[in-house]
Length: 471
Image 1 (cartoon, rainbow, N blue to C red):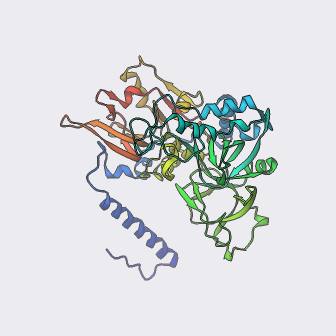
Image 2: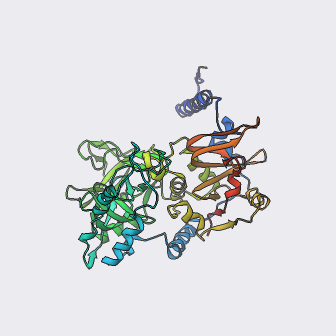
Image 3: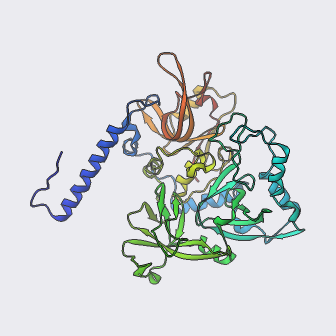
């Protein structure tokens, strides 16, 4: 089909019609390329579109929290949840006993066997190498705490090593030394360093683990506090956004910023019309932490194009926005502990809610067992009927917890509840009586009730909490 604008159309109308045509063509191509061999039960192509679910929203699904309520939510969470920590509240020094306890909480030798990718089992000597690099021998009676900002997305690891280690199932997607990730602009308290000097033990707002030294810029606590508490900031609302290319400044050039990253904006009075041999007229000017060669912090101005998927301040916490944000990750490869430059089920949920300013604990059990929000809890004696009564009255964005996994409720379609989640496996009974097992390994839209963990256990059987994020 060829689009020909009417001769009397204004330039603005032609421009609008042009983009409408591109949108129509992109939808057509998406529908054509989405093959019919979908391995997810009861799923249609139209359900892979955020607008399909947004159109189903009803008037009683209004904004869950205002901005002031979000601030109160976070304040209460940090005051009551043991897994949430303000890194800047950590004392200026820690005793040896305290640090040993912290190190042991993350870097302990597992009770089960571990293997390298080639199938070789880790020996006591292998673990000794990792334990020695914890550098516990270097601890003093009192140890100063330093503070820093994350300069580039970096992994957090169980031990100070990039060696990939697996359990007896030998699923090479599940590196058991991979914990999570930290993102540019996050505050960390630096508690210790590895024996080889290549790793730092850091505490961010919801996790303690080992991070490569090269990803952290160490600076003055007051400077870091001012950076983190800026009230004029830009939030990354796309799955991934890149800063503009700057040939002379690699520390701010093409830096990946994941959804939920928050960076201070340069004040209007301080903005420049040209930077890095580029006009800034069509860019946002943000403050970005960079790491100097000696590891110290410099905060430089980075440029982000106006067309990038970002937002000044937090997004409004609405069902429409929850759906829109979730679908920006649709199809992204599953990454255990933020591996593969992606994220897992809790990372998926956490990054979405950070765009509204809402913070959460890192792991699914910590989230599901937490008392924050409105919780609909079930025990081992709860039957399917009692669970379905809650499921059938869920709100968009409600979080559904089973052991080791979390899903986000999307809506009901033809009497069946659907969820979006970052998930690895897939199992269900087919209409012909065959039990299907396969993989999703991606952010996926699925029905809830028909999914199984094994032949005799459904997802619904294992639901222990449904959480609504409210004050």
